[in-house]
Length: 209
Image (cartoon, rainbow, N blue to C red; front, side):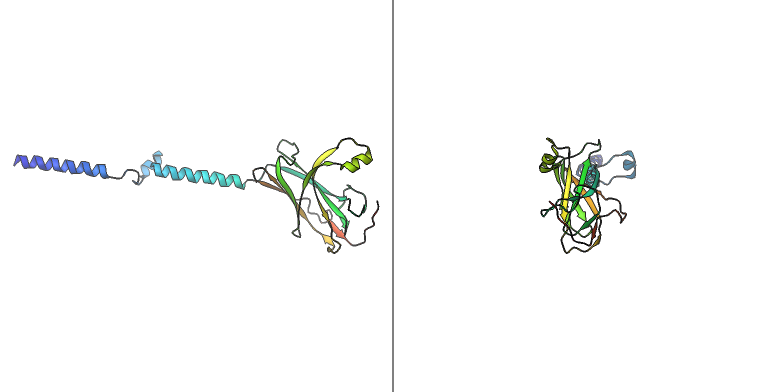
């Protein structure tokens, strides 16, 4: 009788040990007490870390480029000749005249940025047209020779638009979009007063050489 009881106790202990060893460890649900203590299963910690990293990446990609943009518009020379004072600020242009968008981009320290520091700059007109800007020495070589200058006096970005002869008269706005080497962008919009925006006016141009 005593032997049977001893065997039963051994068998029960063996079954209990087997049940403990077979219980899953990594998939056990986390209790409220463990959550408060910061005790998380390995799988939960891995998922949480992935979510945090992905969230930080999305925030970084949504950030604007740390750039500062300034600019103005002037009259440019055309292939057919001069249509008025060149490189003088104005906002009224006739058809067949050239608008030059002059742009300077600086970093957070105030240093001007050239083509090696930016992916590019684009001027966007309100009518949907876009013009890529280029970084060049100023004045152009031909002007430097005429002025007796041996070296450029400045460097900046510029985009040009030769107004078609059938373009409608009126004002239009524009934006300047700069893209840094990380693909982030910064958009600059000039004053929105219609009196200072680019305006196409009626009239015929007169060319001089």
